[in-house]
Amino acid sequence: MQVQRALLSVSGKEGIVEFAEGLAKLHVELISTGGTAKKIREAGIPVTEVSDLTGFAEMLDGRVKTLHPIIHGGILAKRDNAGHMKQLSDKDIKPIDLVCVNLYPFKEKSNRVDASDDEVIEEIDIGGPTLIRAAAKNFKDVVVIVNPSDYQKVVGELQDLNGSVSEETRSQLACKAFNHTARYDTWIQDWFRKKYNPDEDFPGNLVLAFEKIQDLRYGENPYQKAAFYRDAHIEESCVTNALQLHGKKLSFNNILDINDAFELIKEFDGPTAAVIKHTNPCGVATAETIHDAYVKANEADSMSAFGGIIALNRECDLATAGEINKVFVEAVIAPSFDSKALEILKSKKNIRVLETGDLSRKPSGYDVKKVVGGLLIQTRGYPEFSRNDLKVASLREPLEDEIEPMLYAWRINRHIKSNSILFCKGLQTVGIGAGQMSRVDAVKIASFKAGEKARGAVMASDAFFPFRDGIDEAAKAGVIGVIQPGGSIRDKEVVDAVNEHGMSMVFTGVRAFRH
Image (cartoon, rainbow, N blue to C red; front, side):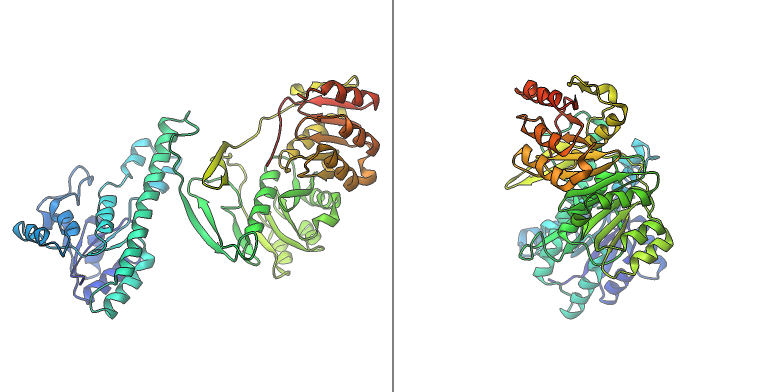
């Protein structure tokens, strides 16, 4: 199969002139449309306009350009089918052996807040996907290219194989082409669904579009292969959209930990720092400055914090960077970094430093968990609580200085793996018991972690206490107040225990499991 005629029609013009020049040097006849033809012609390369070939000028403001039998017959004809080739000859249609197309920038336009619906809809390409699909369907006879990164490879093969492209390359390019159109249609359907059917949280057929950011060295363990993909529609500040400023490449486990750390600190308006290890926080604190917040978060469990991930919801300044550099840290993520702080952090070769930019964008998209053969999809976000939403269950009303730590602990606790227990003093965690099979064991671990700091602390539980034993253990440690969902058949037994110990307890009425 020799490439004698090529159709070039691209929205993104990167590398197209060089590609056209390479084809022309191989005596390939070039056909093109509108802006692409103009750019090629301005470079002094001979090109035939599609409208001159078909005898029909572009119409409907450019909506119809290539939708013509002379074009699609030339692409779809099977070269080894005598009947197909006779029909081409009878209609004076010449075969088209290479199709290079990329599509209108629908995603970019739809993401612009100032774009009208009509402007977005005009970026829905019709002829482009049709050309791509036709060429990919007939890949045994036609080369299809949708990505400029493949221009050089194709020209190289044409040079090496006397004007031909191998079937292996053609089939691989066809795979890329169908992937390209599938992703494009996914963007369009997602925009339409959000625009015209916004109440449909879970459509009958869920179509997601993700683009690969990078291959990873390995997965959770060295024997597992892994890659990192980005949701094409997520615009908020997050680990996926962060810019890595320094350090080794991110690992699979790094990305999981950084994500959990950063999503936690996004909960808070005041300067907040979190130290995460294996997707659970070692310590979290809010203070007047980000430096003080980090110091308190690290102090909460400095032993566990070794080798952890640090997330900040304020710019990392010089003082904070100096504190961070005193210990071994895998990664730091923050909205921005002071130039001197970045210099300090870069003094350690391997530490990963990630910058996210502004945190003001609201969460969007789904929370997705994978099971073998399927996906579990749920909405993101949590119900907000104020002191007015809390139901006092104990005889003793919580003191004023107990309520704020209770609410603070509750917001953090929903980021800890269940069963989870959290002790807080002021706006600082002092003990965390995470991921336990029994709630009383989670209390014991939080008590052990907190030690003497548990005295005068409040306790948050992500779900109700099934027995009074968790309360008794907390009382031994010196806890004075409890926030929990309530709803157990033994709530009375649990409340009685609270009252016996002179503690306060409030119910949220909402569970906060995290699996």
